Image (cartoon, rainbow, N blue to C red):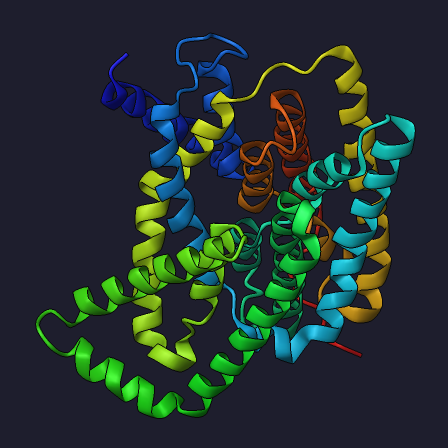
Length: 386
């Protein structure tokens, strides 16, 4: 089948199923993944995975990760790092540790494979959760910002973690490189913020010119590609480069108006093309798990849901008391792009095969369909701190 016709079918199917899931207040990414699952070898077999799709998937991944980075901010981390870290531990780190132990000692998976699969299933996604926070009118509240800080911490841990295990033979070098790059990133962010007024004036003056917006957006994309290339050259995954490039682009630096335009522009491009294409292509590579793997899937998903929900519910009472514990727990159950990205990197690096990749994708779909749906049973108001 011609590649353009194939992409057309995948895109149309993903957009339609994504809208169907959104209508039922479920993450659109679940519908987009299922579009690939249904059209691929797992169900109908209309479209088969092909190496021809890889460049399209890589480009889509870059723009998705760049947007995730732009939506994240170092300011959130510095202001709400303590409470955010606690919720990250309860909603992500402890459940992932439980899944790793179960995968290794109960089901006999290698520790590296267990970590990769558990990270993919257990990591929340900033792109999904930011939408849930916005839908609950919590974006500008302290409680909503604590939730977002928690997710940013979890996503960074997951992306760094998959980079380390993808190069496990030189893991210590990768860890040193990650630490050095993060230190450089924080210093650069501090320098930019210290000179924020001067930088904003420069961007505003450029934005006022006829080609200013084009030059600014082009520069941002080029800087993201450059950082991604540098990180790949030092044995890190390119997704970290796009993420870190995005996280440097804050409204403090380029101004709220320009930052808003950038997010809206990237959102339109991503939501109308890159996101549905990437996730439908990801769904194409899934296969129906064997009965043995179904048991593994159910156990890992149960650990993630039960342990994560219970611990987060009780922790949020103390560390995010301005938001209903049920709301916090449900929102932090959002799964999506970051988990699929982790699974994709693990598959392309040869850490896992198609069966365990498929297990990860189905785990993401199940959790994303269950926990956020609990929001319908939660109140809409934000509590007043006592």
